[in-house]
Amino acid sequence: MSVAPTVKRKTAAENEAGEGKRLRTNQDIDQVEAGEGKRLRTNQDIDQVEDLVEWARRHGARSDAFSFQYKAPTLEADPYKATRAAFTTRCIPANSEIGFIPSCLVLSETTAHASPFGTRFSDYLNSHKEDAALLSQSGRDPYAPGLIFLSAYLVCERFEKRATSFWAPYLYSLPARYSIPLWWEEGQVEVAFQGTNLKHVVEERRKLLKVGLDVVKRACGDLFESGSLTWDHLLWAYSAISSRAFPRAKVKTPTDGRDHAAEGAVEVAGEASELCLYPVLDMLNHRRGERVEWRINENREDGGVTFIAMDDVPEGVEIFNNYGAKGNENLLANYGFVLDPNPEDYVKVSLQIRDASDPLASRKRALLPRLRPNRLLYLLFAGDDDTSIPPDLLAVMRVLLMNKVELERFEKDLSRTPVDESADAPRQPLSARNEVAVLTVLHELLSRKLAE
Image (cartoon, rainbow, N blue to C red; front, side, top):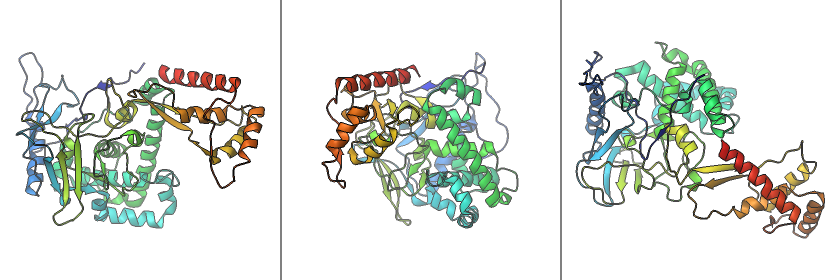
């Protein structure tokens, strides 16, 4: 039987494979053997990072406050090269710059749209609304078309243009493989995630990639003359973006975090319009609670992206970014690691109204829009100091588990409220029977979640 890959438990590291070809030369690198037969890191790893930093600085980036190092000495100790990290070369005072990249080094959907590939793809979707609807799942995922579009652009630049691409130093420095579940075998996903939301997430992302690959082939497959538009290459590009992209309008690392612990490939703030990649800056690893600001100046001439340390950072220590407050499900799906412990980890409680088992289902469904609260999805966070059950969750469950007598009584009381005004869902127990039913069902739900 297949065994799922071991899930890395980290305190701060994005998975970095970094096994792509060298930009400086395509010659093979001699492997150096250590005394006990362990492979030392090759010059290839170092060259890729040096090429990237040099290229970025040539175009106006500032990264002299840190340099990249490996914390593990051998490939056996770190097969995914997850310990590639940025260490300070000097003290960084509070409210000072960690690093900066100019606007010309921001790889975004706008960048892709300006290319021949982008023009062709955009024109195609504008004239083939059915394929545009396929990518967005008929509007259910408005960011999916942009994610597939940017992924296909990365494939074109990395595997079609190769070393002639302006972005080659950056793309060659990216991991060649990722440990996120999208890369696992189907049987491994089935065994590891059966009965969990992650299984559904992986299945939906694979469907999106398959549809996206077909749409891109129809739109501009002839632009990939070498045959580089493949499942493996699109999976690589999608994984690179989902694990390191930033939304354009997101300026500051979230502080409350709760609204950002979602299952999406990339969390996009409501006002964000596109996804962006920030070469060099996106190599900083994650540490929960790190106080970092992302300051963005949209001016094309002298603008760019600056990472600011909000606290003093001593010389010679690892410097971190903060991906935001994310539960382990999100971290594993998008970055390939989990935190143990993780105060932002959560249990998702999804409530449902089942017509097949509840003869009152239609009446309850009609009732909910008038009530506050009326949400059917709740996240219970592991790090909450308050271990009580959320009152909103209990209030909605009291409605969903009403019997006929309780529902008629509640509807009668609600009839006194004008139809254009909302009313409160029951904050207090309706009856002993109803409260026992609520607590029993909640216990069963949470027991199943913990068993997963």
